[in-house]
Image (tube, rainbow, N blue to C red; front, side, top):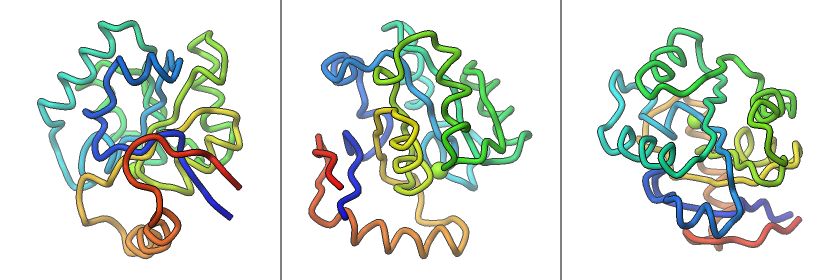
Length: 168
Ligand SMILES: [Mg+2]
């Protein structure tokens, strides 16, 4: 089985409005930890703040969809002025669909952006959304996350950064 995101980029900042327009993406659901900031980080990089500002300027709908704690998600939500939901229960489709419906645009014009192949990409794919996989922002994380990274690396070994065809 091949598990592929629609697009693979090194960092969220690489995901500019031009690429999103070419993909006909009008809204982004954003994972928080290791996607927008390292899981141990207590501040959001200025580059990420600038990226959010530019996408907002381009008219993109944005929401945070995280399995993280409410206090963590609230902090990032306030910093970036993006509505956020914590403890969403990814990879179950309801986690993405609740936030996606609020955008009021077709589901296939919304992309989930995250660092985990199973929770962020596979789950969103099940929900009928587009998917973008980013490299994790740090090497840290929980033990089970680190173990999953090895599995993800194997599954993605022939999928370089850039557009990837979804195949199963
Ligand atoms: Mg994450």
